[in-house]
Length: 196
Image (cartoon, rainbow, N blue to C red; front, top):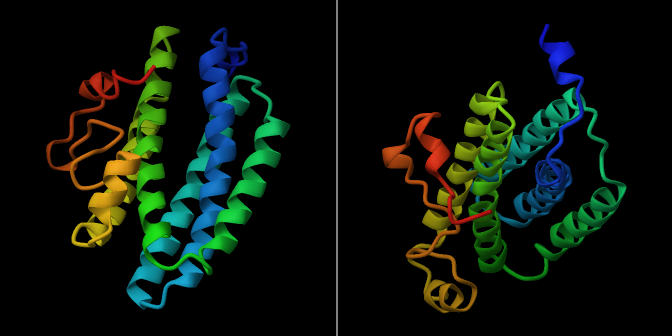
């Protein structure tokens, strides 16, 4: 049975750490989006950001399910660190105006995209392909989040300045995925080769 195969601990420290990190970082992102949604006035924006928050909670649940299959413990350090970080970001959304929460959410999501494709690659190095579909879906969902924030900022006069300083915006992304020309699950294994 699959359960018997999965009971073996993963002999891949980078993958274990990435799963632990993703699990805790998804909580930070979800907390941040609670504050972000609360700080915007436009009801459509509130709804969209609230949906992104729900996606992050779902990703956290899915990552935990994968971790449990391989007896990977939750990192207490990451949990505390990202819990505090998420709460701080959430509160700051009410203080720093509209642009910065949108910008840094987009930049964060841009980086998160590759986490799931790298996880897929690491699993494949171990001969494990059963998680490919769900990791692909989570990576694509993170890309959708990035595009949402990118579109919300694309005509803002501050974007070129922030893009020059922080390396994300209309012309720069932390990943090489184009939602208009999505690769198949198999083809997606070539995504994020620039990230280790």
